[in-house]
Image (cartoon, rainbow, N blue to C red):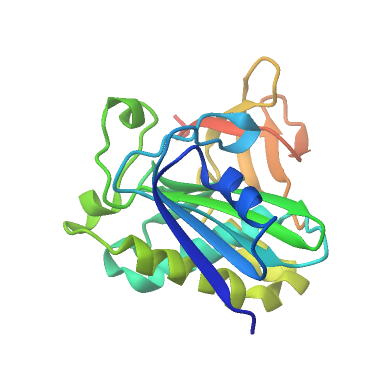
Length: 239
């Protein structure tokens, strides 16, 4: 097993950029963690708010094949690890297509994956011990400290989540395993949602996820569509 080097900074522009800088001079596997990110970037280049106290890190995972549903695989690993480690989270966490971890309808964390060469670069952000101020609160965020009533060790949780991604890697060859799991814990399943695909948002029913990681939706006129890109803006129960 290859040795991983861990780097921690009180403040960074963002952990993904620092990872890219370090890999040019550092051999082996790398993890970069920051106390806060001044310029965190999430999916589709959206701002990734990273206040002090939260868990913000990037690490690499050696896997030569490009897996369309890899982001859901990482979501599966995070969901399982958090549920196993913290009893109050069991049965209350959901996976939001394609890259968020939700708790009782509120965002607990998110992830970003890039495949370059024979590696995946994985960025993970979890609201652990940080305060949910107005800037985060408007997105419906929640922190682990708020849920659990105590602070968690960001260093230990970082290592736990990396280990989960590494240890479950055999299921990447059997995507039905983690896709089924994601469907069982899918945020918004069987609910109407506002869908954003880069045009005018529209409402549709969330039906599930297919084996390629696409979101299966049913539009109001009954048409069933598999979305390979886009995002869920909000969900609402049927009236």
